[in-house]
Image (cartoon, rainbow, N blue to C red; front, side):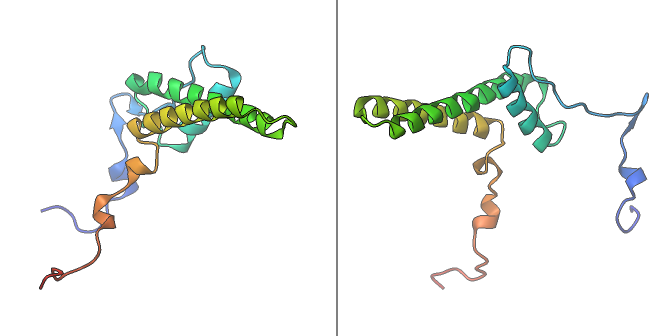
Length: 135
């Protein structure tokens, strides 16, 4: 039988052959712009250090590119809305671009488990009913 009570911090520490091992947060790739790299750092620093293993770096880089592109498209939408001569065709085209970027962002965020939907716990949604409704 194990010891009773909570385990101490010393018991929980991971110590490898070379001492305490630290996990470094991934650095943004060199091909990202400064704004995209800032988005990368913001996302990576918000989550645990081991959240993004090497195989997800491509997805994260694309996510950052789409977020920045979405900002640019929003600027375009705002400029079209502010024009005196409102161009409905250009506005519709910009909104379609914005929707496309939003779908890409949502899809990538869900795949990397950084969206609210990916963190949703189905068990918590269920009510606390103890009796079946038909009884």
